Image 1: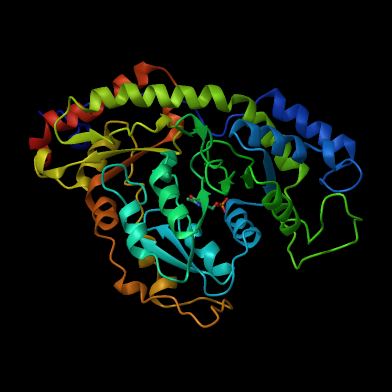
Image 2: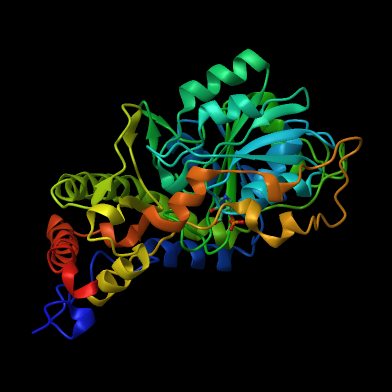
Length: 413
Ligand SMILES: Cc1ncc(COP(=O)(O)O)c(C=O)c1O
């Protein structure tokens, strides 16, 4: 008789794990009502300092250990705004990883910069410092690491490379709210950190974003680039630079402020559940956790990733494993998208109106990132963050489901 649920057996997990997402309570309701009744639905005007957007900027920046925050419409535009504030010029080359969401790189093209896409480190799935070093040319101006899945990238090595070559660092922290590197909030380590508040993220306002920085001058520029070229303290209709309107609304900030109150506790819960899960994963043949580097002081992941090794898992494909696991009640996914340079926009060279001065993007079809390819194709497994918001009994159920598939892998061969 079949034991595996995919073959008609009983499933291991027959209840919800973790929590539903998004989470909200009376705080968001009260904040939204307050905005509605105030008649002040945007951050501009006389009360800009006390607006919900300003409160969110201050609260979130402090939470991530940064001095300044500038709230933005979304995470993609947060990166564009950061690149403008840091002084990007047409044809400048910016190094970013292959394993990320495409917006990391397209944000560069949207400001006429050229993303140079490099491989990741197979040990921790983060941008490889050696690959960064190898990609530097005399056109390189900065590094755009992603804390992929919320796991802090190797910032010490990246900073050392940046210092040696006179490069800036903008951290794409879209997955890393609440993650800490050597005790310091992700996004506050390099020159600017950019976050997304899109609905799946661990802090959300439906859509939204924020840039943080410890640099006073960059903070002023971020403010100006998100606010039609205005400068703080200057007359309202005095515009200093060509800039877009990237302002967050008071509605978004009302919701984000509620989530911010819960973020510390949720981040600790995710991190401690992940550590518990990791100990269990080590006991099962054919799966293993990402080994935690010593700099990872808190991993508040957007998705938790671990490794699947077919050769130690009865030779079945990752796809087969994911399907069998889903039947047991644990919906995982590869979550690991193909390396971004495989997207048609890169292979077809569809840059839209972007122009790169006297430089040209590389032939992305020839950009090789073997580790990112392999991990996306066969090894990486991801599980969404909300499943980690319950107790360790949920981790036990996940482990039980994985172990059951491993023990009965013969049914899948
Ligand atoms: C790594 C990364 N960077 C940037 C973004 C863009 O954020 P948004 O969707 O808010 O524009 C995302 C969105 O998922 C992302 O995953």
